[in-house]
Structure formats: C-alpha cells, structure tokens
Length: 184
Image (tube, rainbow, N blue to C red; front, side):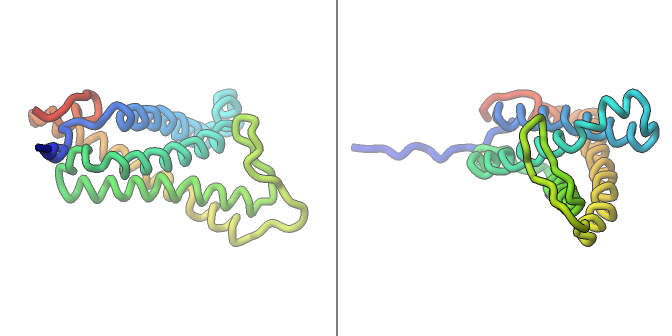
C-alpha cells in the first residue's frame, strides 16, 4: 500500500538562496546608489572617480541576479511565505519591474551611444562607428535616472514598512528575510 505525501506547506521564512540573493542585491544597490549620489553631488571628486566606473558593471550584475532571483522564485513559489498584504505585493511587483527596467534602459542607452561596454573585463557589447541611435540615447537619458530615483523611494518605503511592522510588534516581517526555518 502506498501513501501520498502531505502537500508541501509554505514556509514562514524565505529559504537560504532567496535570503542570500536578497542581501547580496541589497549590498549592490547600496553601491549603485552611493555611486549615483556621489556622481550627482560630487562629480569628478576622488570618491566619484573610484565609485562611478563600477556603476554600469554593478548594474549589469544586478540585472543578472534579478533574472536568477525571479527564476528561483518561480521554482520555489510553493515554499515561499505569502505576501502580508495587497499593498506589499504591489510594492514588491513595482520593485521587480523597476529592477528589470532600469538596467535594461541603461543597456539600451549604452548600445545607442555607440560605445563599447565591458563589465569586470568581460566584453558585453561592441561599439560602433557612425551616428548615435538617438531614440535609444534619449530613452536612457529621460528615464534611467528618473526610474532609479523612483525605485530608491520605493526601497526606502520598503525598509520603513519593515521597521514600522517591527516597532508594532510584528517582528516576523523582518524575520522572514533574516532567519530560516520551516513552519511548525
């Protein structure tokens, strides 16, 4: 006689892969925003000359991690904790959309500029001779930074929401992304 295994139950916490990628992306976004803010406020400073050359490569790395994160989320969706509210689900959806669109628009602008791009010494796209592809450059010039600052506001709101939940005694919201463990 065979028995069926009970259905898998979602975790109260995210798995170790999801947590590791989340916090790695947090560190890389901290770098991206430090480089952008420094470039905006202190262009050509020593700090800007140190941070800015890595802005594009780190952006590409974030895009790659996002694709891996989204794939892993789909594969492990049956074990992921449910969203705590529609607002949280909406904000997370907006963050994912922006995490994809911002570097994509940056890559489109890079290609349209005709300049080659290498990330960490690995050639990503060749440059080309001739005129820029103006609509690509304009798309990036008009939306890359605007969407980046919009995402920063959403990130700060995301962090603020976690802090508010914690202060209100709902520590599980923070623990979902900081601790592992199965639902009991």
